[in-house]
Image 1 (cartoon, rainbow, N blue to C red):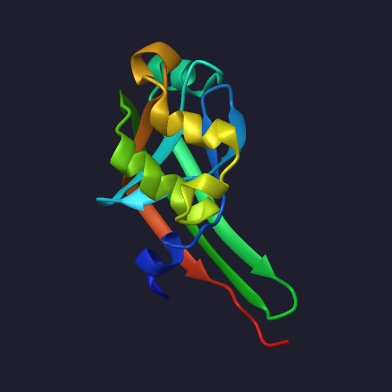
Image 2: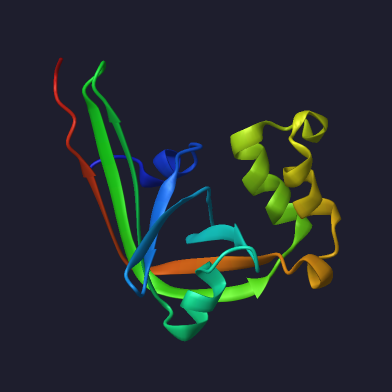
Length: 140
């Protein structure tokens, strides 16, 4: 891989995840323990699609025309629906919203404080079977 993939995936970028159908949706994610963690639940079709067919592909990329930075990570693997845990949920949301939870929109705080058994909040975990990274940057 031509750049530090872990550092790239630690940034608050948006991934696009594809499931059967095919469908593609933008998602916030946490790259942790060599897997993508995506918060989801009954408000979305994502858990049902993954339970019906666990094949998942996703891409995380950036394209900055001002600097010429073009990087991408493409991953494929099997998705698993797992119980939600608050510490990982905080880490995932904090990377996009900042560490001060009191500044977050109420809907994001509810993910951490509502009972997942009632809200249905779960994790989609995708551990890549294959992952490629490319740095296609150019000089401006």
